[in-house]
Image (cartoon, rainbow, N blue to C red):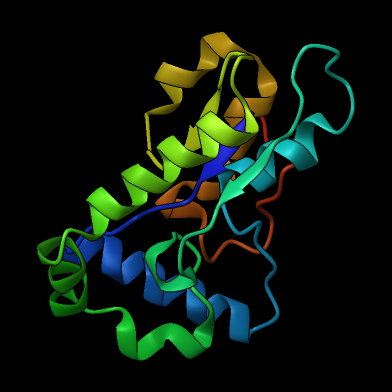
Length: 153
C-alpha cells in the first residue's frame, strides 16, 4: 500500500477547505497529512496482507492539509499554473517510478485523495469510514472529529 496526497483543484470550495485546515492547524488541531497516513494510523500492524510502502512525495501545498506557511500558494492561479505546466503529468511519472522501483512485482494499492460519500465507503468496513470522516469537508473545524472516536454510523 502506498499513498499519493495530491489535491490540485482550483475549485473555490476545495481552496476554502485548505484555508480552513491551515487555520485549524494554527489553533492546535492535528490532522494526518493525507489518507495514507490516516489509513496507517487506523490499521497499524493488523494486516498480514498489506505492507506499507510509503508515499510519493508531493509538495504540502498540493495536498489536502497544507502547512499554514503554504497560505500564499493556496490560490486558484497557483493551482492552474501547476496543472498548466504539466505538474499532474510529473506526479503521474513519479507514481509510475515509485511503483516500479518500490512495489512491483507485488500488487500496488494506492490510497489517494477523493471525497466519496459515506454511502460509497460503508461496505468496506469501519477504517475507511472513519478516515473518510476525518477528511470530510464538514469535519475540518470540528474538535471532536478523529479516527479513533466512536462517531456513530
